[in-house]
Length: 150
Image (cartoon, rainbow, N blue to C red; front, side, top):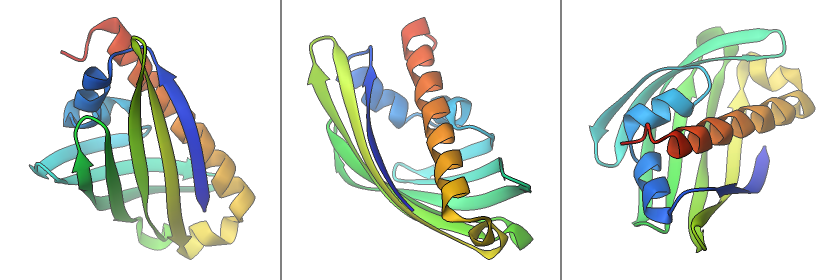
């Protein structure tokens, strides 16, 4: 699965960068995130429960941040295992650009799924992924605009 997009966030780039590197904010914004622990400045452990079509699974995985260029860009990659539901692995290149008082967040995602998830078909996985991404960006924007990111 490949997905890319651009989101306008009504917050300065430094604030968006800080939010994207804050485990508490990420935990609150990632749909279905049950836990997110920082193991090091570039490594996190996560537990996320999601439902794609008829398959509901809890994924345990690790996330790594690389190619860090604060506050402009990084690559986030990870792999999660969901038991009999299968696995998901992939990465995203994230870029932040200033646009007046706002920030334009651009992303390109490449991901693979296996197991029962892969049997669901790419259209269902793609549409669910887009919905989850939209929810993440909505929650992130609301959190930054409400001032609860401090």
